Amino acid sequence: MCIVAAQSFLRQRGRTSDFTPPITILKPLRGADDRTYECFRSHCLIEYPEYEIIFGVGDPNDPAIDLVERLIREFPERRISLRVCCGDLAPNRKIGTLTQMLDSASYEWLVINDSDILVTTGYLRDVISPLADSSVGLVTSLYRGIPGKTVWSKLEAMGILEFATGVLLAYRGHFHYGFGSTLALS
Image 1: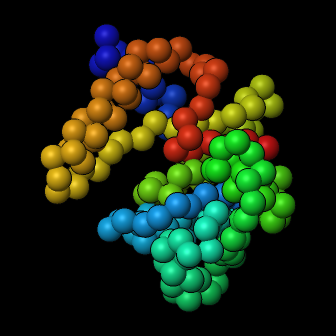
Image 2: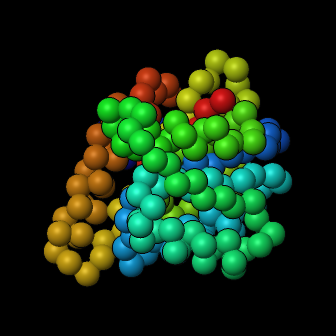
């Protein structure tokens, strides 16, 4: 059943359109690990006509700040900004940070994704394309875990794989929920 569900999903997945509105990527951050910079950097290599990246932190001493500043130096041609978001504007810190970041967004179309997401050069085209259909209000994305060296990291990656098979079994062409790893919307 998982194989049939995956085949159905993959048939849908390859469909992209010429719909390429300007996009704001919102990336709420908290902390950093070995692969954080690599994940940030992958967003600067995206092949897409016009987009900006807004990083947001809730703590002015967050170690991710240094990585964002390094990214800005490495990619001066990209529109990258950092927002230090202070105060609790929501019961959830991530939502509070996103709320403050939203004020800085230049574009109507948004992609919100986690700090540990490593993307391909076609990522924005893939996630924004379904929004060309006015009946689609939110786009989400399956993801996979890349295990590190520890046994806990390997177990987490296996858990994500099991989670993805469950999602594919539930897939019928229409989701009524989104995963926080990637959300695209207007």
